[in-house]
Image (cartoon, rainbow, N blue to C red; front, top):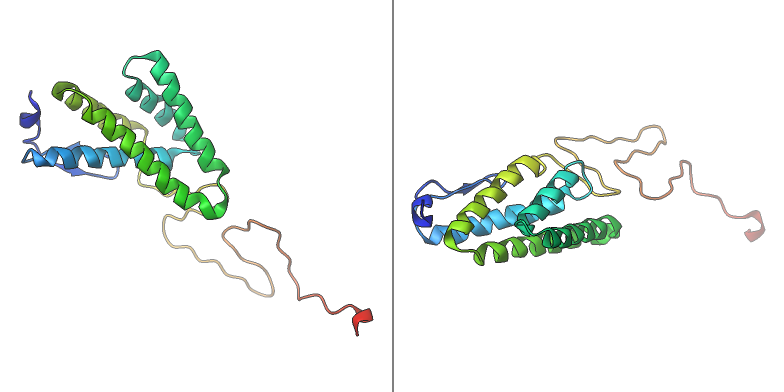
Length: 184
C-alpha cells in the first residue's frame, strides 16, 4: 500500500505515540514529527525506570535496522543518555531532560526522513508498535531525588515535626541553637 493511501486513514498521536494518518500529504510530516516526539519523550521518561531495559533494546534494534554494529552504537548512545540523566544535578535535570528529548526526537526524524516511501511506512509503524510495547504508560515518574505523584498529595507537619515529600539533605527537628554563652 502506498504512502498516500496509508495516509488516508485517521491521524492522531496518543500518550504512547500511536500515529494513525488521515487526510492530506501535509499531514505526513506532522504525523512523523509527532511520532518522533513520542520516541524522544519515551527515551527520557524510561531512563532510570523498569521500562528502560526493554525500550533501550527495542529502540537500538529499530535504529540498527539489522546492522549489529549500528545497534551496539545506539545502545551506547542510549546508555550515555541514561547516565547523563542519572548523574545530573537536581537543578539541571529538567533542562537536560528537555535537551535529550529533543536530541532523540531529531535522531528519529532524520532516520525516517532518509528512508524510501515503503521503508518509511514500515519504520514508522514499527516505531509506533515498539513504543506501545515498551514506553512508560501515562503514569508519573521522577528522577533520582524527586517525588512522583499521580494524583493529589497532602504533606503536613504537626507538633514540631518535619514533613516533606523528599528531603535531599540533612534535617533537624528543634529550635535554633541559642548563642554561645561566651558571646554574651
